[in-house]
Image (cartoon, rainbow, N blue to C red):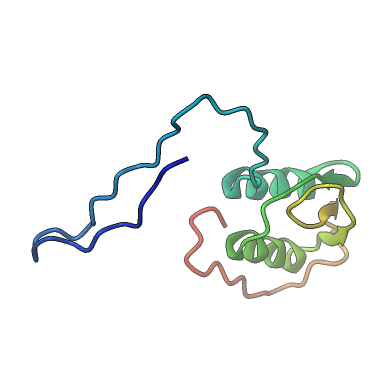
Length: 117
């Protein structure tokens, strides 16, 4: 595969440098493993927290946004623990649904800049 480093902007109006995408000189035969999706991880966390029983999220994306969602759901009474997974991107998550007894009357939920929390 051939590629190059992105060049510096050519003038003051050019805020995004132009960078030629790499190309293959021959067919590629490869298997690519990609990390999970932030949006899907957060949606699945909410669904698992509302489910009737314990759920396991396999190969979730571990990011600041998903950490904020986990903290928010814990504040609301869900139990979320990391469990060993067989993926390349970190542990799986085991989610025990929201417990009415575990909820506090008032709580502060930090959403950060997350658009999905």
